[in-house]
Length: 103
Length: 84
Image 1: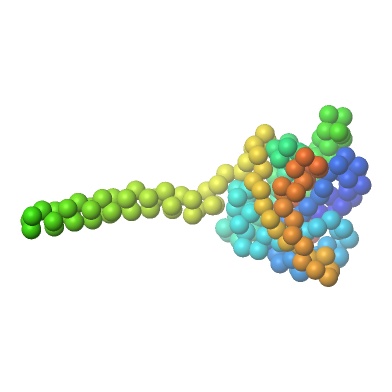
Image 2: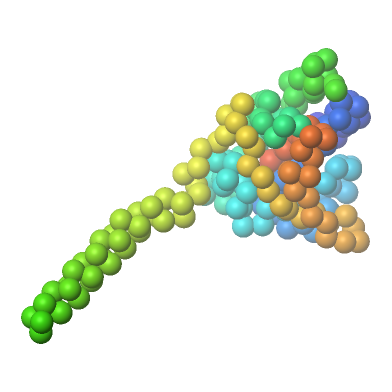
């Protein structure tokens, strides 16, 4: 989430809303956001329903895998980064900055 | 007539049982969301409504509210307070 925060201005400049999601409570996520300086919303998927719908729920940990989805204005998925690849969101930022996505 | 009625009932019960037998696995499938596979690039992202706490209020966010307006980066993280 820190990495996304670092790229937040570039992402927002391309008409992109950043949202974090975890199975933590909304209150824990707010405290976490404050602690690491994240200013975008960290959503609470308490119970993991949405995480399951996205097919990334790990029953072993009762939590999500680390995954970034880039979703276009048409609601379709444009880019995915899974597990360790999701730590650095550069690929997603680059996709957002491609000219065809700018309008 | 007296003999037929139980048969009709039997048939109805059998039909009912079969319906349950057929419907049960189908319901079991939809009740196992863990079997849902991760959507692929080009797929529609499943819509959702989730809340976050802004420090004062709980606010609701849906994916569909950005449709036609903004791209969305949806970053799933494992747990709060565990690294970045």
